[in-house]
Length: 238
Image (cartoon, rainbow, N blue to C red):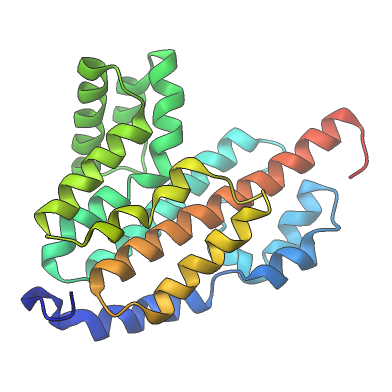
């Protein structure tokens, strides 16, 4: 879609996204921390690596995984919303939709426990726009009795259809909803996001790939910490 009128800001967006992506972790960063068995030691070393770009500003105890998850969701949410400063105005609603992606799995957890409305009102990571989108998803899920991953994908499809996006764009974020970075296949998904940022020449692809990459890396960080907590609790050795 390079010829679309609203995409004349592509060069600026690409430059900003590439600068941010260059500070994100690569496989060698994860590999360097792989032998570390303790979550606290892992986080200390992570703060001295490119993984630090993902870490919440708050100093949190690594054994309080729920507090860490909440802070990580808010961190990723803010990082995706940064795109609003660089992307064409026509993509604003798409960016706001992508900014909910870090919350989708948590939405589903809360939906099953019937706590979603209360959480939407209290979470400090959401502004009025995202809160309204969250409420719309909650209501749609209540009426249709569908999971949040499907509901969020419907919302994404609506945003992409309004932008007349190519069909392939709808598939860029599918792995974030269906797979996990800690499995071997996850390495290829991660590489694909980086590759898309490097070669795709549209603002639309940059927004989707950057958002997906951030959430994917956040999932990987959470998984690394949870693994270490589980082994610590079990008294095992990795």
